[in-house]
Image 1 (cartoon, rainbow, N blue to C red):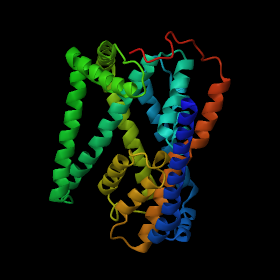
Image 2 (cartoon, rainbow, N blue to C red; image 1 turned 180 degrees about the vertical axis):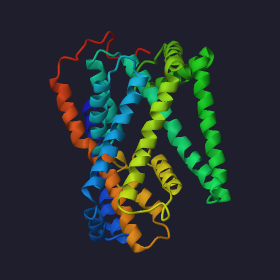
Image 3 (cartoon, rainbow, N blue to C red; image 1 turned 120 degrees about the vertical axis):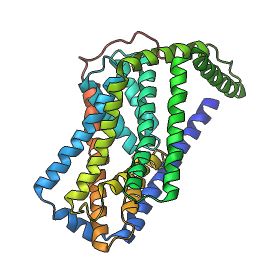
Image 4 (cartoon, rainbow, N blue to C red; image 1 turned 180 degrees about the horizontal axis):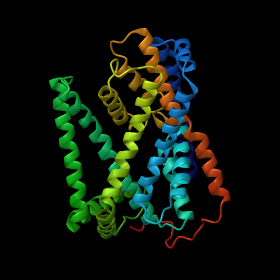
Length: 356
């Protein structure tokens, strides 16, 4: 009975999240965007693009999709590029279409990795490391953008202070992670703390406390340290290339629709991109749909005329098409391929539990 009630509550929550996300997306595209620029003018801008410009944007977008595969192979030894492509595209498609899609996307990746013989510990380690490196870059890019604005004389005193605070937060995060990887005592404290918190929550539902998290954390971070000592340069380069490539898709889209460097400089585009990427980490809608478009458009449209606003909206919509919409059919095809392809299947060595 309790299990049935839990499932009903979970389903109701997902339905509510879906309705709220839909309302946000509809509100942005049906009511907010038309106030920024006429869709007719936006379509005229896109229609005026040449086949070479559209083809170039598609190529840049496909390259951007491929760059993250190298991040995945960096954090998971033994994962091939084709496997990284299949798992990444399938999980991205889920994340971009489902309420709470980020968690569901992780579940899809987990199922694929397990079917290819990777252990739960391999998956957990790869997910944690790639997540941390991605967040480091997401925190770092606004700082770099503000520094460039300051050097060009375009940053205010408040923005410079914000950059300094952001830098301090980033450095603190790096130091804390470094200490957990290098210090057995710190890793054990983190594991024990997590064990106490989860055990107290389990006590509320009359379940026994957990044990062994301290030892598991020590083993986890020791293995993580070994991996990073061998691959941190490769991982850092791959992560930077992936994030910069996404920014370049936006910049290429703007230049392709006719927005010149004199009208909106590349540093201004980088600042808008970096801050919106940071804000969009909050899962308001699947894949930040609507939120990213509105944020980037608003940041770039301040003080510009109507024609330029239409060009900006056109560029942002094209940018999101190749980075958000395009991965969906590719992901669906990737999922079908995974289900039907048995040649990559291997039996994992561990049970379906987190063992490290």
